[in-house]
Image (tube, rainbow, N blue to C red; front, side, top):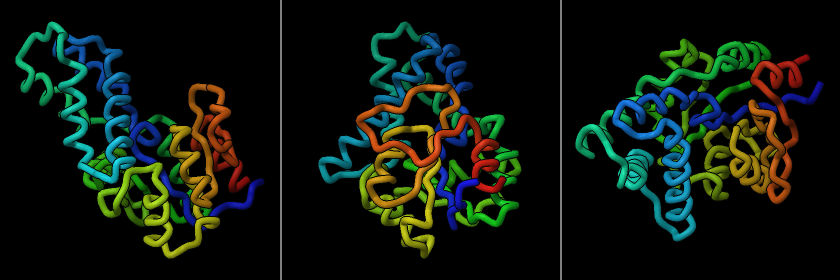
Length: 224
């Protein structure tokens, strides 16, 4: 058993939410379903670039711009505005991954405080967790909109420590994104990489304290 943290900080997009259904939305408008990965990568790239340059903008605006970029040149079956609106509407219907409900409830039952920190909007996280029947398990939902920079900038992690009134060493970030794990580790937080696909963690990033295949496994490691 690993000593549990006081607070677990969950990333939201892809860590809790399953983006797979968005692929169907791309296919609906005549685009390849696999384009979802390119779109999300472009969205993150542009958010990171703004942060590195000292700027910031809302996730929704960047998501819209990245969508228009990747759909340019695709033989869509409707106009660009309608296509973008259709795909983006899928965010409001995303489910959580299958391992999330049981894992979240087990962690909360162990007395660990649960919060979220997303590069997206608090409302999106709130709606996702409400649909899944999990909102009551979380003490608070937070967004980088409340601070000055997107994760993985140090300011984002400093903000969540302040919001939780706990030192970095008492918080554990849980994320599927290695760049988020690295950023949190550099800021002094404990980390757990949610490695659902069995990938190798990139050697150029700070290795996670825990490498788990599901939230259920994380709960077992921290509470068993």
